[in-house]
Length: 298
Image 1 (cartoon, one colour):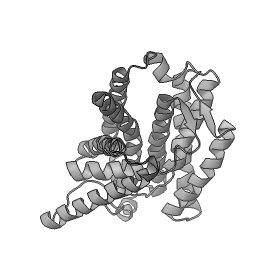
Image 2 (image 1 turned 180 degrees about the vertical axis):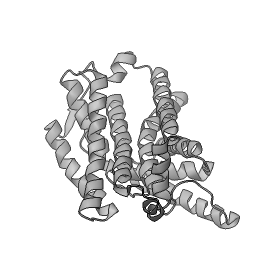
Image 3 (image 1 turned 90 degrees about the vertical axis):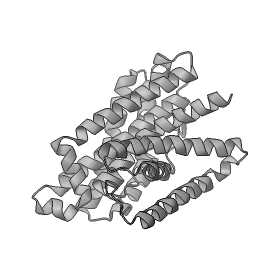
């Protein structure tokens, strides 16, 4: 029983770690406090849900959903770059619009995927074996982390990382800030949409409220991972996102098993995040040397 609970917790942590990779991209690499993933997470789930219910194969539903997430990131970048709306407000405005758009896409507040035979979990784990689901999650996350790590070693990836380090220096070097802002936010929200697709297909339904607060959840995971690993390289930064989300879900699962009401989960998330932030600040004061990679101002 305990082993099954731990396994289920790790699965959820791995699925949400895909979202955390997007948070790493926007908050750490691009230096953009993007709130759009609350909407793009839901958009990805809604689009893929409608696709699989309509009979499209799972891979096409994935592609269309991820492209929808990319478009969400591009819209936020457009609001910031063209209308000079602040970074934070651009994401919030877009996130608000995406809620209504998701309702339009699904034409209802809740969409069941149980009857569909086109989901990735039904095709590769029709027996609903918990440990096979864990294996599938490990394969998916390992492949994503590896591919993204290799991308960040390319010229485009290095420039994306340079944008977050210093936007003014990036511009002085003659690199197009707007182009890489669009690019970075598209990648970030593509990860968020992909996470929404995986989570919705795993749980068997899409709910209009499933995207609410996912940015805070992913930030909590990232902060936990960074506190423990103190990433000084890109590889460690990506691993911190995965490890942090697994630990976060483990803590939440433990709290629920100890009798914490589900209505208090938001409080638990805030408390866990505050504790890890405070612990990291104390570590930085004692060492007086913070060499963690990425934009640490947000």
